[in-house]
Length: 562
Image (cartoon, rainbow, N blue to C red; front, side):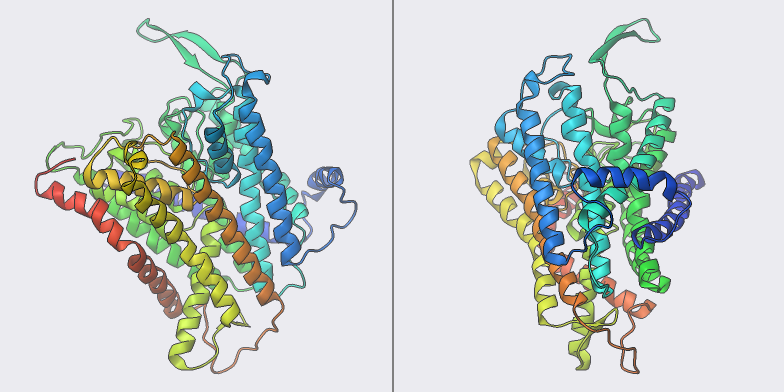
């Protein structure tokens, strides 16, 4: 790899970390209700919004059950609202192209997708949705679903730290929306407009290209959607080509900006945790494990795509499905990042990646804790921390402790449910789909590549990622319903288990540090923590990966292509 290739990767990574650290510290102060210079600007807005839901003055504290119920009921109401908007699209305003309402199963899949922060799209945005639907059913939940995941993670942190209560869901949600998501997304949208993304309520415009060719371009509220889809680690695109579309991601600068937006908040949450814990060494251990996994995945993808396919020896490596304006380096960084941070936005076609290149986003979603999206990857990483201290405790014959709390049967049972649910809702529907004619009929590629397409779809839904391998016709009753159910299970069963763990740990007394305490903020435990993740992931997913990407890679080396 050339120096220019490495610089195009290292500079954005350095910028993301430089932004994330102070942002994470400031978010910790915000959620600990510490004074801020911006309080006079934000507090009146927060009070106004909270008053609309009946909260006057200080918000009442919630235990884990009330907090969880508030999450589930608010999300259910928003899901029903999105579903209704999509069904009634044909009679709603701001529909210049006259689109009708969505078919009910597609509407269910889309509503489940966007309320769970997945943003899987079994439709082509510019050919299916009106501007009203793009804003009310797509952009709106990209704010609220992202905020929901983040504040659940903050409540989880409060619980494992032994705070008196988990906070108030509505207050936390409004605070994150008003202080973080709205200001940053507005600034990002203005930058995207400056770079060439449209922001309009028109349906289409006629333009004449540089060669004098007339064409019609579909436009709409593109810049605003592109900003929150990355900042909120959402990923749903205005256009079917997502961030590979020249109006949604016009320049290399917007490509870097979109990477920064999707990376900064999941990374910042780690340092929010360190500040709330009062131990930044612990935060760096978590960051180190996640960063190491990400760099290995990124290196694998970069090598595979620059090496290309030996059956098609081109000097530039594999450029199939990639945008020339981004090149190999920015494409590799974006592709590895979108599934590490479970965003799902794409600036190339993942179906066109080499077999090992395609394994990278798939593997990141299978682990589901390589940074992750809003709170998801972070909470999953802490769950593996609980498992690591439990296994270590068994080996040394003492009751394990995690962050000063004893880890016992209840916590491990709940953690096991959350960890094992993820492969269960991936592998079972994948096996079902490859045995059923209505599952196989959607494939456009045979053999190992076809298996990977189906596996990728369910992995993307379970990880609340939303990216697609693009070789699967997913807008069918089977895939709309099954992937919709997988997205809901992947989101809410885990939230319930995580909040129950937080409630359990919150009630326990803190154990003072003693000579026998296993410290979790050391490099040694960080290595054990990481090994636990990789061993569980390998034991769970290696058999199906061997039948998919690995088999396809070996076949490619043997001179066979699918």
